[in-house]
Image 1 (tube, helix red, strand yellow):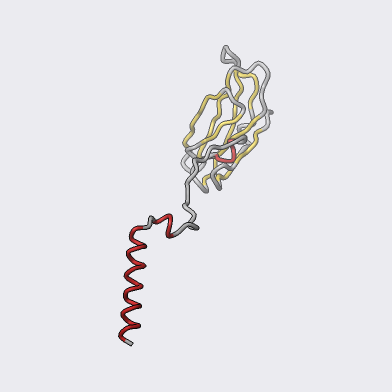
Image 2 (cartoon, one colour; image 1 turned 180 degrees about the vertical axis):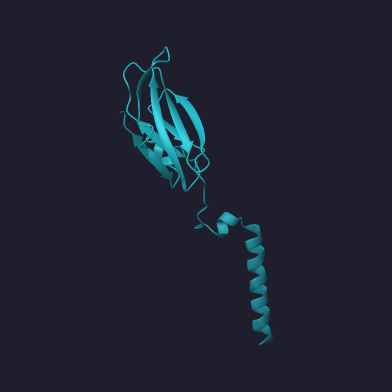
Length: 136
């Protein structure tokens, strides 16, 4: 019995010395190493938007658009100029109602068209939520 125990101990010590000499890859060849890939949006930026996306059709002869946003909870108004036919309002707060309107201006600052400032109310529910405004 002592011989069997001695042989078992000797075998275990031999395996430990072999294992100590082996690299981690040699001992665990089937382990999958996780990797983190950088995310780069492709195509539709709205899918990764971090705020309320306000869309509207383009207007011929426009120089810029002014997007107006009124927080109906505290009655604060913000305006943003853009040359695009959409604007992402990153300052939106979840479960807050906003009144939205857009003006289209030519190079001299003349108002060409405007959305209805009295009918475009939206409650912001989630990041990337979008709303389309129509010209009146």
